[in-house]
Image (cartoon, rainbow, N blue to C red; front, top):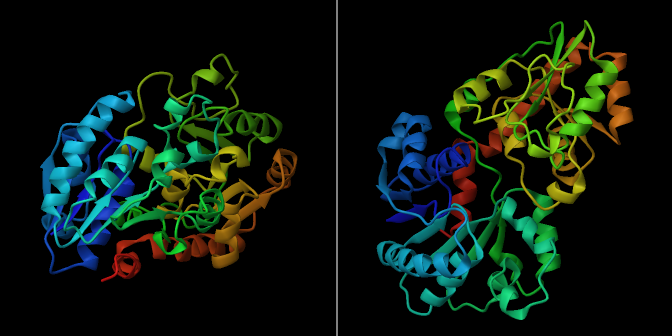
Amino acid sequence: MITVTEPIIWGDEHVPVNTGLLETVVRAFPHERVRFHAESSHIALVRALIDRDDGARVEFRETKLPPRGADFRTRFRHDLGLVGRLMEEAAGSHLIMASSCPSLIAALKLRGLRTAVRGVHIVLHGNLTLLWSWRSRNPLVRLTDLRTAMGLPSRLAIRYFVMEPAIRGELLATLPGLDPADVRLLPHPVSSVEASMEGRGELGTPVRIGFMGAASKEKGFGTFLKIARRVAGPGVEFHAVGRLGTDMAGEDMAVLATKPVLDGKVGRAEYVERLAGLHYVCMPYEAAHYRYSPSGVLADTLALARPILAFDLPIFHDLFDRFGDIGHLCRDRDEMAELIRRGLSDRHRYRGQVEAMRRARAPRLAGQLKDELRMALGS
């Protein structure tokens, strides 16, 4: 039996990526039982989204998780028990962790002193940025951080999955003690069901440009607003779909045709519908965060084959290098504003950009990704 678990996330976070991961596991190992452990509301959302045939192959098991804000000690006690049960279940096969934290990695290495599991595979998400952030000078606090946990020796075969090529190089440079063979690329999985909801294939008027997800300064929403104020007009609309960050409260958003919500969340179905209605997705991200972190918005954009407007960061540049013209890369906000002001009116080029996004999406769908996962698990 291959055991997959989401050991941290509650509710609607990571639902598309975990759905894509489960579809990939099921197709990579058609003759193996696959079991998924997660919090109850997360399971309900995954079950609702997963491909029907793939979902029928998954055994879903609800598990109780500590609160998201639990301290290291609380999490470590819980994770020791969870890891022990999961390793016993996965004996002779593989255990896949869909996310991680320091206490979980430490528990894996401690429990791994005595286990019959073939290997543990950990998917690394945005928490990887903690490796490059400020560290406490207190040695006791440092014992509980991600850098320490990943650097601990282990008798257990632990492999890490990063979801973008550029992140793998950064990780190996930062933790040279890691064996390069244990840091593997698994392109950010996307939901096959959501990929079937792909939006506009033709450029229309007005051109609809959108900012998706958390509308915060860290994610570049302030830059998006400045660009919109400079160039919005009869031929171009700007939309923001997501929750407004507290650091952007009080901003004038009159220029936006769709404004971010102030309270609550945008439901997944509405989010996907609005994304499908865009021509371009604007990602004016800075290198400080996305140099080391995969982007869920980028994965969503690929799933629905929406061309991008983005700054020249490694995660975007890699896609242009491998798949061609998937949109427009700009040096800064002035260049992006000027590009939009001149007009995004080349319908022939736009059709080519949509096709390039489809090519970039294909390796992230279970139909192709299953072969990479099978090789990565050594089977």
